Length: 218
Image (tube, rainbow, N blue to C red):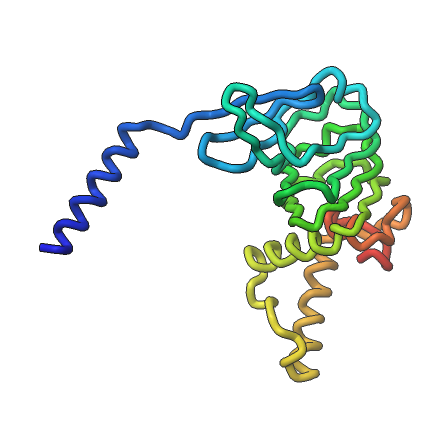
């Protein structure tokens, strides 16, 4: 009877959630951006640049934005906006952010004048397979949050593409470690392009995220 009662409560909760419909959306703006969030969540995302931001040479982000209707604060947690009309040469993800921050796929390729991505936040900055597709080849990626950003990206890249290569190499025999490193070298040779003409091709973050770089970078 107890299990039947639990099932009944869960079923009623599900019916109520379905009838209630989707979580209400929240739209906000300030002098630089328009934002999107969902009620009940703590983060919001940049969805559009204002005229002021479109003419700015540097795009950076405040830690939070406030919904003027309710007074609720939302942490700024990602960039999803179309950057086609932006003249920015630099995007900075500042250390003042209070939450993790993501750069959506295919966002940066429309920022045609972008030459610099500064990652200062160490709260977790997440990028995806197509985040850097067709970006300016001379882009420089730097800042104290870059190592963590690339490490998180590499972990996901291996997890979803080459899970067998996720190893604790300190516990492998020298022979097994060499075999795994050889397999990694084959992946790089197959999926990454050698290019000595890139301004920052020896930057490991640039080479890995753009899948193109010099011998040093790769």
